[in-house]
Length: 315
Ligand code: XIL
Image (spheres, rainbow, N blue to C red):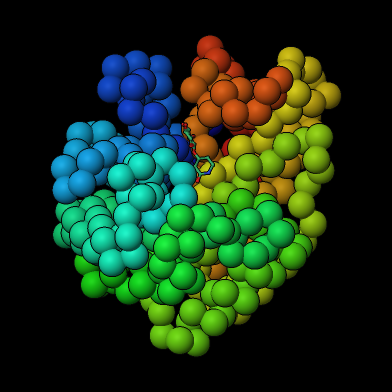
């Protein structure tokens, strides 16, 4: 049957994956699925600050360029992830004074966004990532502590200055359903737009786990953001479980994937879904969540799982 991207295109949505530059360079099975099944890609790590500017003013774009070249060759759109985040940002940034940190942010956004501004494949950016803590307060990161909350608006304005066309997103986790954190996100986005800050898009990461239940009111949550005039998208979808897999867990996982796809399809403003990888061979989950894994659509041997069928049939 037709690959995921054919069905997604017919629905006017993107279906994407997070690209791992290792296997993307040299693993045939990985490259074949990446090219054939998806029409969108987010570099999993290659556009993070630690990858692009590991020391002050020394930029390295080898990994990012590799992903962009593969995407271009396969007619896929690229989402840049991410410009301003508390994690995977080098120590040299974290220790700067306010004035120096502001300058570093200006230089970084101008350089990284500017590099791809005229590249037709690179269409959107996560300008800020995970600015909230788990209670829906602004996260007490080095960004907030040093610059105050204005760093968020400043980052969006700098990104707009570097690329007048790119779609500029705010991205976070545990904001898929309606809850205190997603309401805080909603209020921030509304305020930023009222202030004329160029926020075009809201990303719901979608790192789900079957043992915690499916978030409530995912479609309604997308709709309330859409009513603010922003595009929405699911940016990092995966559905982990306590390993080992079994058929019961696989079936539950498949319903989670299907529910997310159906929510996006039901909301015009939902542009698409990016899955945070595609094969369990390279998922980030086992490295971060002890005893959990099997979160993706293909197993570690590149065999499709029930969740692949669920996504395929829902699209
Ligand atoms: C993860 C990557 O998948 C890992 O390879 C890396 O070691 C850590 O970061 N939220 C995000 C992503 O916004 O950037 C994270 O990606 C997963 C959680």
